[in-house]
Length: 340
Image 1 (cartoon, rainbow, N blue to C red):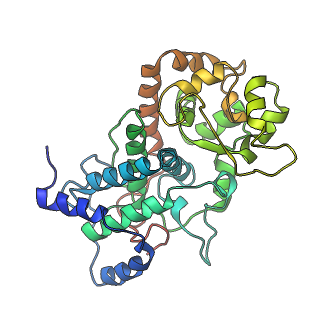
Image 2 (cartoon, rainbow, N blue to C red; image 1 turned 180 degrees about the vertical axis):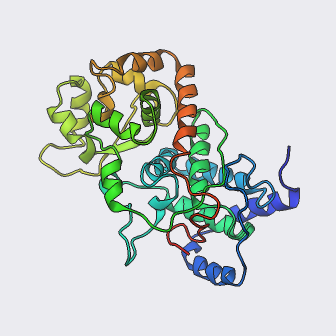
């Protein structure tokens, strides 16, 4: 069923074709415009897949079109947008706190822990938000944009779809300290991973399935250097193939290698097959298959892509429900990088 009339959908698509490089300059003007308009009251604090059906019927189309364009231009962007949602939800919950710039009152999450120098896709979220503010002022939250963009990125790269529940609101603060403590790092061992996910209400199955997001994307040399030079549970040929671009003595910290060398731009179970041959790029990857409790699940996913994508979609639904702000809590930011 079409949720928007042809005129409204055309307007959204035409706007997407406009050069949005002026987004940062326009956002302050939008803030002034909105200050004269009262925000719509949120009367339903429960999430719903149809949350924007009346208030912004073309929202999902606009997000999907923008994500598709971004991933077509840069295949790596799909993994980056998925990672943004994950790194948002693991710190304070799915509240778009990861997008906030530092202020005089708090230090944001962008430069903390595993986020430092590696978050990408922020400009894609900016463009989506600018478009949605033009279409439906103060209606669609940055947190919901992140959740939908993550789903659409996975689908565009051949992965599963799931129904994103909508109605999240945005945080008015962020926490660098929580980002440093709560986000699992590339050198995490299995116990650390299990503990970190359990604290968020996620099971062992959820943890392994969500780790399968590493079937797409790339990692920086500084995050796998120790693994290719000091770890013993790594295929020798695989390690040697990476050392040329990631010297032991330093340099090349930001050189990239695919997390799943077999199909880095396709969302499939190739990541798990690589673990069986000790070709996990990060220490935290290979920790899933190293003679421990998650070995059997890795084997199952490696042999059954359908099981993997089904469990992944289910885990993404749970991830997207962590510690939400709804109803009158939080706000709908006009600029995803700053509180109103």
